[in-house]
Length: 280
Image 1 (cartoon, rainbow, N blue to C red):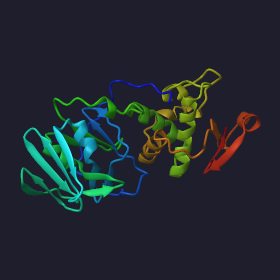
Image 2: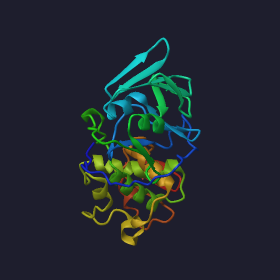
Image 3: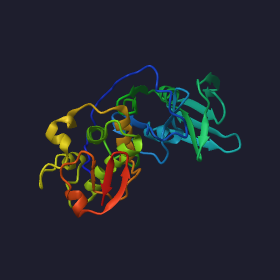
Image 4: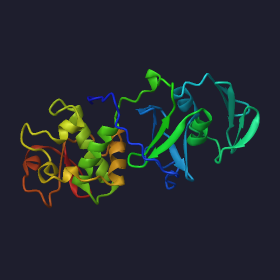
């Protein structure tokens, strides 16, 4: 995917004592990201929030924090971690972990979903010497630990905080008040343009593209600079994760308020979602 990778992520360390409690293990509307020392890390399984606790795959976090050893006991369904002289064990279905042989209440049950074993992020990271904070704006669990080098395979280059920010802004400006599906669809069009040779290859470039005239009204009226809602940020992350509602559509318009119908006359109709018609 043609996207500009920014080597340094924006640092937005907003610390909150509690994580949002409304998400469920099966609710993927909200995509929870994990960053370690400012670097978004990739995983084939998303973190999630359940009962006020944020969970993430133990192996993903352990690898990102450079633990000395990790092992799995199939018969007891137990993950064991050795790091800097400390041994931690998590057993699926238990709300206790063992720390150097002593039982410690983790505050939440260790879970297994889709073949991945999940532990409470805060408990695990703090036991491994890390600090945890929550970026409420972008739904990112931020872990910091000195002396850690993120393995190349875990570095998430697919999108950055900066890209979430600008994509959420255009989604908010174009589809404020629309359902999540409609917001994601607007994000899909932006990302389709990023991927197309006909348009600039960055989100920012697509939004402010003026080669054939300004492409989006919010750039002209200034609403592109409004603060995006939480729903628009969620939609941006869904679109960046390639959750697609409108196929390869490159255009959209609201026919009830549009003053220019070039799209209608020159592009192939794909579908209608909420207030917008989408065109290939």
